[in-house]
Image (cartoon, rainbow, N blue to C red; front, side, top):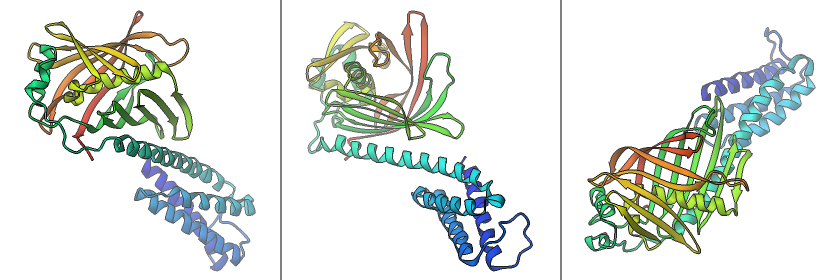
Length: 362
């Protein structure tokens, strides 16, 4: 897509250069704009320069769209002045405008996310992080203690903040197609908070950006098509709050030392299963972790609201671990799939892989 759009910018810029050439030089180029005076020819040259600068900034991943907006406005004025010969340039301007608006929307969205990340991490000033010892495991179910041991957290600092990167596939409905995505996520374990920022390739040349977060027990989900059009905007909703808290509880497997946090309590169900409850303010959620005999995590399941609308009801939400990987000495489930278990059948909707993770980021 980047090469195609770059080609459009190059061709459109060169056409404006032809308008300048017609005003100042005798040329043999056919189908060029006729009757251009030298002052107007200079405007065609300026449009050429603006589109060229936009192209360079676009290729180098700089903020190119502001210059592009100026180029489009000037270009369209010139096209209207020479409509009979230049009217088809409007099509190129529309294409460039749509891509520019999408880039501007993504930029504004990312600025919002960046500010929220700063606020999320600023609430946790890491000084002398607690070292996880055998004493911290004494009150836990035996299988949970095994999990922490083979994960490699003993003798290490308790994780207080996390940054991770993901990739994978997702569906929005049982009969929809798979869409690839890439995401970045930040956690503040001390305040039971997270922020997840995702880009989903919805279809060729069209993507969605989304942000899911939990701060002080309140969840919020925002998804925008092409960075501009809101598709989902849920907040101040008890069902969304509950779902975000369950998500945090399940994702604790990526930073196992969080299992000894004060706001999480454990109940042994049998030799291989334990129920975890996350309580924050006056709200709480629970889920069941299942393990192998050795202590590797197998799965997580909980009752979670499917959506946040008034008709949303709790359904079984199931996370199945598929593979493990060690990052910075900590063994975590790096590949998982997520399934809604409806009465009518399973809806396998998410396949996620952790590609990078950093603990106790500043």
